[in-house]
Length: 99
Image (cartoon, rainbow, N blue to C red; front, side, top):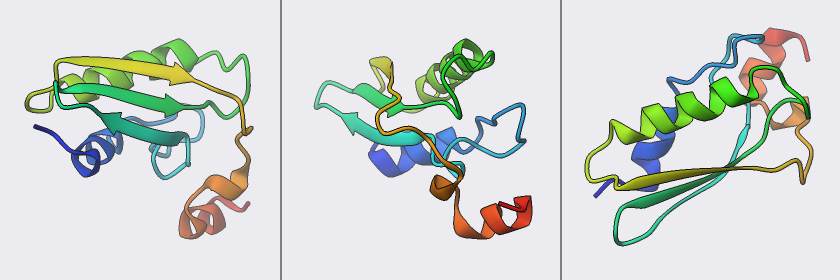
C-alpha cells in the first residue's frame, strides 16, 4: 500500500503551469489521507479561486496518484479555507521567485 510520503513524492511531478513550480513546493496540498482499502483523499487549493488551470491540475493529481501501487480510488477535494498565499511556498523557492 502506498503511504503519504509516496503520494506527496508523486505530486511533486504536478506543476502549476503559470508559476512553473510543483504543487507540493507551492503549498497547494493541504492534506493527504489513505485508508486501509487504498483510497486516497487529497485536500488541496489553487493559487486563487477561479484558477483557469484548476480542472487540469485536479486531473493531473489523480493521474499521478493512480500510478502508485495499491491505490484503489482517488478523491481530490478543493478548498479555499484557508486561502493560499505565497507564504505557503517553500522558503527557498519563494526567495528564488522573488516573493
